Amino acid sequence: MDRLTVNARLMIVSDLDHTMVDHHDPENLSLLRFNTLWEANYRSNSLLVFSTGRSPTLYKELRKEKPMLTPDITIMSVVTEITYGNSMEPDNGWVECLNQKWDRNIVLEETSKISELTLQSETEQRPHKVSFYVQKDKAEDITRSVSACLKKRGLDVKIIYSGGMDLDILPQCAGKGQALAYLHDKFKAEGKLPENTLVCGDSGNDADLYTIPDVHGVMVSNAQEELLQWHGIYAKNNPKIIHAKERCAAGIIEAIGHFNLGPCISPRDVTDLSDSKLETFDPAYEVVKFYLFYERWRLAEVENSELYLANLKAVCASSLIMLLQSKSGIFVHPSGIEKHLHECVDSLRTSYGDQKGQPFRVWVDQVLPVLVGSDSWLVKFKKWEQSGGERLCCLTTALLSSKDVTVADGLTWVHVHQTWFKEAGPGGDAQWLF
Image 1 (cartoon, rainbow, N blue to C red):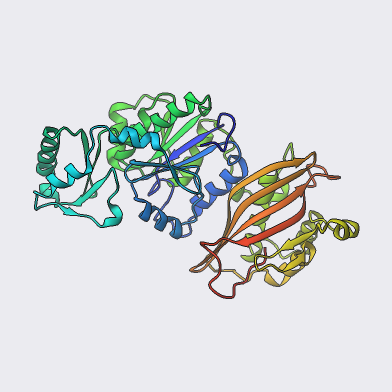
Image 2 (image 1 turned 180 degrees about the horizontal axis):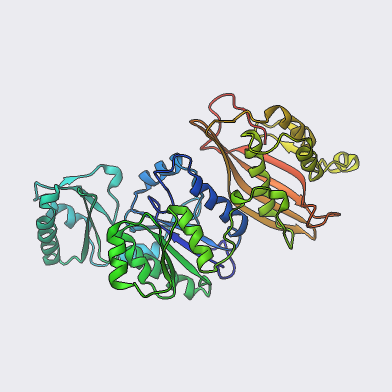
């Protein structure tokens, strides 16, 4: 993980299902609240880690279903795979750890002798995970038998039974806590140990995350009884572990505030973003604020006021000399069509409330500003827009400037260029304003 050149300000390590992602929240509001908080305040100097039992196939399916951010590190397949960045580059050092006293062929050979075990689909089989279905009343005896048999064959394995039917056989060192300890050791060796780590979970298989020294921990309010019982026995008096009052991602935001780990007010919770008081120019916040307003405008959640459009025009480059000399003040639509930014603002008049009452959401991902001059930032990010069952994404590059403006004025949008994200471009004609 080389995106950060210094110690991360905060590393969040979170389970996904029923922790970061609330499957009982069809509008995904808590997840969207977390997204805007993270992109506005943490993306540029912190690390986001997803730790899930899902295989890569099921993980990618979840990403298509929910408005999830792109993590810096993804831990999958019951913690047998650690990958980095957009390309999900595997961690070879972790693979070496897992290879100790592990032989997948022997596991398959011995388990094939047990008729009660049914192999799960091929997508759930991984180099360091062999997964079966087994009836609940036979699980305990089979687990004991398989464990003894593999030990005789020289293997050291961990067998996890969950969900009343799933049985996973893994290397002994696989586990959420072990993976986090491995990452901490790796960062420490590079002189980049995060200043703070917050671990987040909801079930028993998250428990060993909280055993890692010096981490802060949150059990979301909807945590399962098995995790709460573990906490009552082993960590009841640990002030660094809390049981949140809020569900899922909202509980993670609550923990950030409880432990004073940084800003904990999501821009989505700010009614009037124009009242936000910043001490310095913040290009990431400007991007998040703009697209939040865009969403609220189309949902008619803000007043249909010319003042809002005038304020938008005020932060868009408009000087005729600038336009003629440097083509600034231009928006390049993902289709390739060029327009002046002021034209784009004018086009918002006819789109006010066009998504009212619809499941329409906009979010930005991987907002990463780079200072390219004494008063200019180049900001790259993914802009997602979901309307009903259709989800579109474009890769966006924006040039923002602080020349001749104050912090209260906000940064000037000089140039915006978008291209369709190859995995989520339009299948046909699609309305795309910004």
